[in-house]
Figure 1 (tube, rainbow, N blue to C red):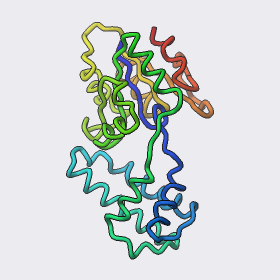
Figure 2: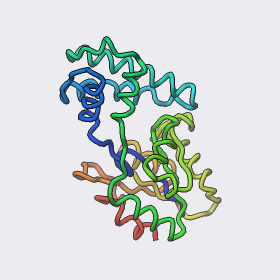
Figure 3: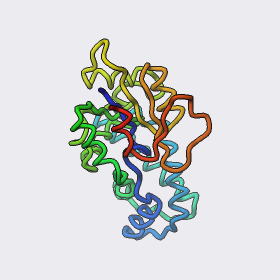
Length: 230
C-alpha cells in the first residue's frame, strides 16, 4: 500500500524556535527576550507560509529566505530589539539556526515498521523545496521512499493534484487498493485526502478537534498506523 504523510505536526516538530532565536541573536550581540523573539517569529512564519510555494529551486529558495529575513528584522525592530548592526547574512543565519526540526519520538520506529511491512511511504507537505534537506538532517530521508513539497508540485494541500503527484512518485497502479494519507490537519490533510480519493487518518498529538468525519481514524501518534494499514 502507498501511505502518504504530512511533515510538520505529523512527522516532525520545531525545537523551541523562540528560545533558539533569542539565543542565536544574543550570540551575535543582540539582546532580545524570548517573548520578543516569539512575536517576531510569528510574523516571519506567517509570511513564509503565504509565500513558500515560490521557492521551488535553490535560487528561489535563497530569495525567499532573504525576504523572510527582512520580515523578521522589521518585526524584531517593532518589538524593540536593536538589530540594525546585523548584516542580512548574519540575521538569516540566526533565523535558519533557530528553525531546527526533530522527529517525534514515535516516528522513526513507526516508519521503519511500515517499510518492513512492504508499504511505500511518500511525504507530502506544504513546504518549500528544502523539504528534502529537512528530511535528510532529521534522518527521515532514509525511512521514506519519496517526498514532494507544494513548491515542487505547483499546488498545496488540500488540492488533490499534490496527492496525485505523490501517488505517481510511489508508482501507484490503477486498481491498487486506495492509498492512505496521514496528517494533523482536518482541512489540509483529511479533507484534501478524501477529495483526492485516498483514505485519511488524523494524527492528533494534543487534543482531538471537533468535526472529524465519520470513519476517519484518529491516532495520538504513529504507533497505531501499522495496524490500520494492514
